[in-house]
Image (cartoon, rainbow, N blue to C red; front, side):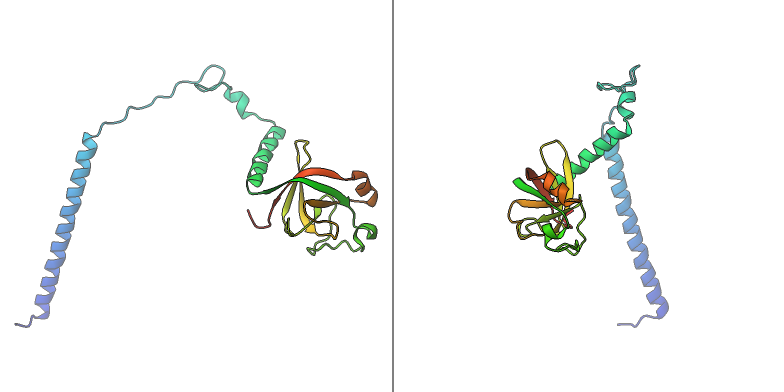
Length: 197
């Protein structure tokens, strides 16, 4: 077998590249041709012309005029946003029915100490902190309480307590008198573990 010179090897390589490019172009043209044939034969969709709006600003098939629907008050917008947020939270929550709700404050009579530091290490915050049984509601969970008044009350499971066992939560209040006055209630409680959403 004859040994090829560098120039002959270069020419052969160029020929192979040229043949490869030509084959690629042929395949591309064949594909393009078949695509054009398919699109020309396909039936074009009829163009849809929207119906004009009515005199009152409503769209066809719409019973609420656009002018009325678009101008919500800030309170209505906030209420609608809150409903969406609550629905999203409740879709991830665990529900507990017939939960006993009691109340405490950070005094030594309620807690046995007066520093206000909870089992989670956070300071007990009136209207925010809840003591719960950690085997039921883990510490750090968001706790939503429904007393049946159509409103959800938001708290955080910051604390535990020797008397708080099972389906029982203890809400932190601003004073001992307020805790006594709030009494004992029953509610539906939802909780979402910290980091679940």
